Length: 307
Image (cartoon, rainbow, N blue to C red; front, side):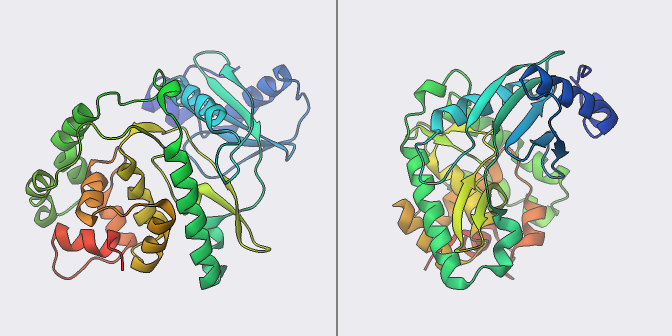
């Protein structure tokens, strides 16, 4: 019941249109034994995602992102019960029709940490970042090799080369000014990143937005959204940590790093920020403090420095 979606143009027409998406989601639920379930679409996220009767979540992936659906189903199954923070329990995942993939999973309890953060007392913020550091350490300690057939990039050095070659163009497309753009090649050349690092399972988007928390006690109750997972250098996961969890707070980042068990150099993390698949430096500059010096080195210390 869902039409093929293989291009950006088809995506823009089909995915936001509930007159198209909802009948397909209802049909799929019926096939999965959930006929007549109440569906409520979540407003956030790049993929169409529905709460199903409050107990389940159905996430749909059009053909253009079908591999992401395969990855999410496999990764969630791999990490189930192995992290100190709950992750969704996979009930079923696979192919629907016309190239669409789906994952039917349990719904985690709690409030989105990004929405709750301003109400979290400082002492509880400190404990939450400790819990996030511990969860990230546990994730990185898992053997990623069973997922090697579905997660990239395979050759980490080749990945770095590709990302480095396109780094200036990527930031230019996002509107970064020339004064910053011209610093990128020299900065990246000055930071020695491992071409064959310890291979770890990476979430790649460790953000407050992907954690749930219980307001009655402020404890983590969930970590979700594993569709962009990769296998690679553990430092790559600290891009999201610094930008979207600790957000330039050196004390919180230091606390999280202690819980994780390792501190990374600020220049290394800014280099990975520039090389990240979804890197958007102008956006980060609007969200975080930009030092007056106007250099990438000073930016690295401002966003990823610790005390």
